[in-house]
Length: 113
Image 1 (cartoon, rainbow, N blue to C red):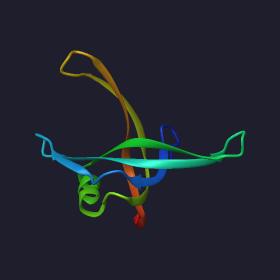
Image 2: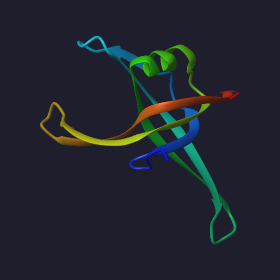
Image 3: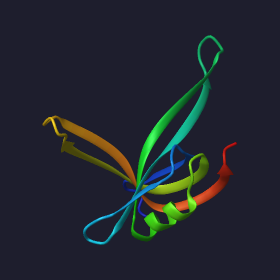
Image 4: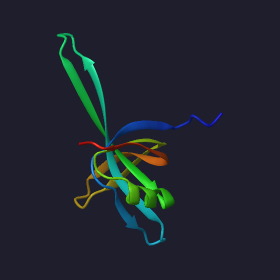
């Protein structure tokens, strides 16, 4: 069985076109966001939609594929691993980031109209 440790699977829509950078090492990095929406009914019987935004990173060939084929509004399924990191901004404040490093990608829908 494939390892289940630190595995994330998401289905959602892109919030923006992927941004691609070529690092000094020559390796490509694509970053983008996807939105996932859950729907439920609250105690009053009202329909509630809860949308979560996820930061996604793709490296190397996956970055090339993302930049070539993915567009804002498109529905995708992805599998990856959860990454937590921190950095200091220009004011010396510590910032924390959680993102999904994409391993697999499946384009399952066209652009939302």
